[in-house]
Length: 302
Image (tube, rainbow, N blue to C red; front, side):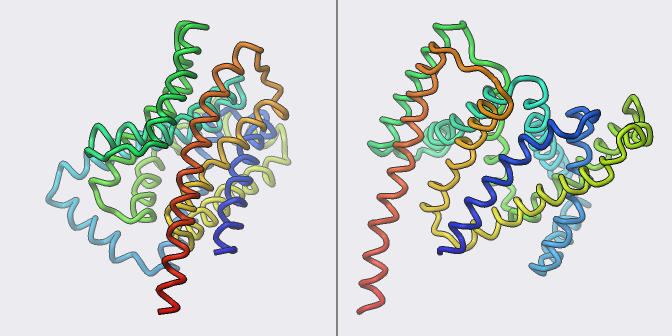
């Protein structure tokens, strides 16, 4: 479990580092960085599938695609939904929307709670009800302050739930689903690089260090993904869920301290209730995990 905790936290730090790393890849645009991330991730996902000996699951999906046209549509939608998030993640820090995206990741666990209640009839606990109420206070303040929630925040908070719902319906393993997502995004990534102005050769010629920086970005992204997947397998679901809140905290501080995006005094009244909401969900997960541990010890003793 200690290794799982370390890997989960380390993956959050790597994703936060990747958030800032995009600003170091000038003259590459956010679109080009996204394209390189997809291209460099695909062989790494293939390696992970090979290590887990799960190519038979990939081939099973290939066989289904021969006769199920709806599966083509579902995979296309899944790839597009994930692609939008991957693009936004590297585009936002370059264009002054780092804090808005971090806010979306803070709201995401709460929107997932609401989706679980509405779409799957899951009952809300007292902690979850309080968390949703506090998040609503923060969102309401933002609506009163500026009349809307920023579109990057909305894309993250409202764009990921349909993706997770679709993945749940498809019933693929995480790696198999990610493989098809990246495979469908690959032609788009190649096209984006081919149509870039200036072209790839000109970009790398103008800054030769990109030959090192771009593969390093792929390595950071791949290692972060590997640590995240290994941690998800080694940790109890409750503890893994609690640790997932580390990443949005780090993204916020990267945007605030390293990217220099300002937070006005009024904006803190939007952030604080949402942070309290996330803290409530984290406390619930920690308490649930604490209740399970004694039962496990008793089971071993008996």
